[in-house]
Amino acid sequence: MKVILSHKIELKPNNEQETFLKQSCGVSRFGYNLALDVWNKEYDAGNKPSAFSVKKLVNAMKKEVAPWSYNVSKCCIEESIIDLGRAFNNFFKVSNTRHPTFKKKGIKDSFRLNNESFKFVGDSHLQIAKLKSPIRICESLRFKGKILSCTISRQADKWFASVNLELDWNSEQYQQQEPSCVGVDLGVKSLAVLSDGAVFEGLKPHKAALKKLRKLNKDLARKVKGSHNWHKCKLRLAKCHARIANIRKDYLHKLTTHLVKNFSIICIEDLNVKGMSKNHCLARSILDGGFGMFKSLLEYKCKLYNVILIKADRFFPSTKNCSSCSEVHDMPLSKREMNCKCGLKIDRDVNAAINLKNYGLKAVGSPA
Ligand SMILES: [Zn+2]
Image (cartoon, rainbow, N blue to C red; front, side, top):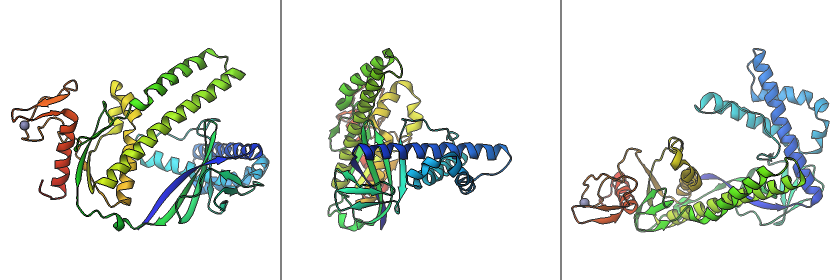
């Protein structure tokens, strides 16, 4: 089986190299915005622009309007035009997608390189086309395979290279001897409760960070925009954001790895994340909990580890049924425990997880 994985590695550029990286991000953003402008004008003129036609037009004007773009890899512009093409493709084909907009400096600064424009030098350095010296990296590449591309990005004051590789993966090696099934209830109170009773708290680790975030936001609003102190505060805020995102990501990785390494069948609720986020009071917790990320991480890890992933229908009443006798109960959010006539006394989330586990067993045709 061929799989595409990515490995994100922190870079340690020196001053000169960092200037080059910043320039590359700038050229990439410029290329995207120029291409978008060309695209819009073509459209207004009654033509049917495509990434290909826009690339030709941009290339023709590059030398005149952006001679400095030749200081960095040509990928910076080329790959951003590919991205723009993709963004338009999504806009036309996927509902609820916004028309592509111009990029702003300092927001998601990044650029992508194709596999001909960078290479690893030993285990410790990354060489980028047009940059004089290779950049030191914090760890060596984790996977061995065909290198496809690399995205360099900046988060707060740190730089990262996310390397995409295609590799041969033998998921058979992860076949577990004893099949075991687990139901996972995703919740607001705790991120996940498993049918075996294990609880993964999702929000607590960054409650403190969120408090700090609010304070920094307030501090920033009080500073004179553009001043030295404003910039200092802005960097602190960006660092705090990055830290929260990292805590969440790390946590979700741990949870999903635990699941795929210990169970051969996993059943989750197919939550409609978009629909749920509209509900105001739940929104914050859901976004913080990172349900969407949980699902995508779990999906790809299940493939890698040969685990069957079952998504219960959105209308499957996992919380309302007693997991022992199937009696239907009225379960408002405030009710934390289910007390059933059959004698079962159980935490509402564990009950839901067990229902999901039974759903999963039924779906794969195994007797519970
Ligand atoms: Zn019961």
